[in-house]
Image 1: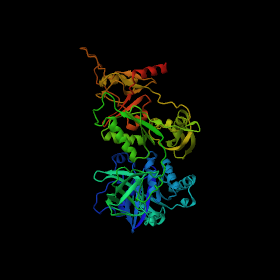
Image 2: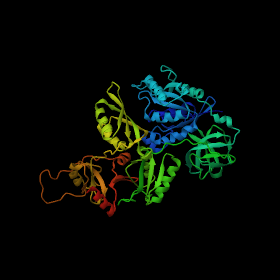
Image 3: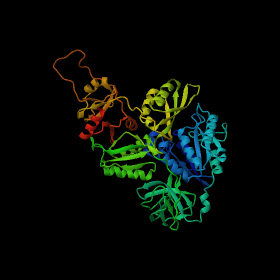
Image 4: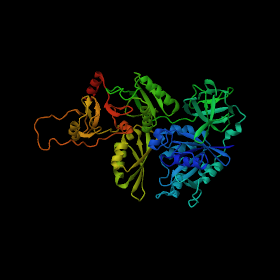
Length: 606
């Protein structure tokens, strides 16, 4: 059977996964009476809750005698490590662009990787049936983007279709029949070249592992594209590292191929196909699985380095161990090492004491998803404020800078520009009013300046602004950036909060919790209205007497507290604070300091 391997790439929420749903339906993958779910490729709980793709996943459809392997990729740059590996498995890309928004920052990130590999793109202008759609403008912007990214003449001569993934149609022209996706299927078969590896069927077997998975019955599974030769079940192969060192020799216990949404065992893997192998115990992502006579490893696609780091430690608060059952540093370390094995964009380092671990990655969202997964598995953690990773270049300290694209109402553009160019040391690159009351602002801002800014941005724009960011380059260090201005309210007692005490504290600032909640000494319960920290007593009850007065015995009415999400809490804390994460709670607290450390800090402040 003819083969085509293609990846679908796009910015967050431009409709990749919805389009794959329709491709599966219209190719006859489902039985006539089979129950189906929306966004079938988003199988992870967090993916379905947040409406984003986090893990790259493959599927397969048949169209007029041709098998098309389709890889659904994440749209967010924080999960770019998934995209960089996946693109080495395919021979073409299907770039989805929202007809109203046009190419966005993440579109640029993924497209640059695809063009650099020489992949020929197909452009799908999606959501053309929206009221504010401008498909011709979006298409012109895609061409300009390709030209700016250094696309070849062949890549610039890209075919395109107009589509609505939700409605399940694609046409070569805007005024087409709008019936089905046949035009897109035919274009993929015609434009994407068959795998070149198919011509190397007589050579020894070689496969580059790009994703690592596991199955409770089969064990470890490595997925990749067969680069040459064929492989049968029970064949003996070996695994080579990137440098060509032999890792292990093993017998292939199972070969699985993608058929629709499931994987089915097959007897033989052929060159060019995307398959999963089982039987190995040590081999991992970026290793080469090959025949015993092969001595050279396949080149692995380099992964962009991490830009931020977060310290994961044990939860040593007075409430530790009440929610989760995985609280030891050894268990936390094993879980983080397992994550680093399958996610090549994450790096783990031990701290000198061994009680905490420095986890480096791409961004706050990637860290937030990892922490959320761990708390759902029963872990209790203490998390530090994210820190930007610096590097030395020719004796100069360099820091990462991100390109920020902001869509905001005209009336708020002044406040946004003031914050990102003034307080946060950013450089304004572009400012384009669209004439309908919206302005698009593009700026280059140090990553340090963006940590914790999103909440402030939503406040400044009354919740109407949209901000997207992506790593741009390394630049010389831009000097100190002011952090959070307000201090915090810190509990000075252990116990359960009292409504009367909280009611009296509302004049001091906004609270992060309500009545009848457990607190402890050093726990942050709110934000102070001034710039200094303030220790308060949230347990102080009303003094009762046998005298009554008009109005003094009314029920206490508390203002609704500000409940922080995990990402908001991590971005909010300062360097001397921690986020306590358990399966049921997210708390903020001051970092515990030993007496010597307290004296050093006091001398420094003096």
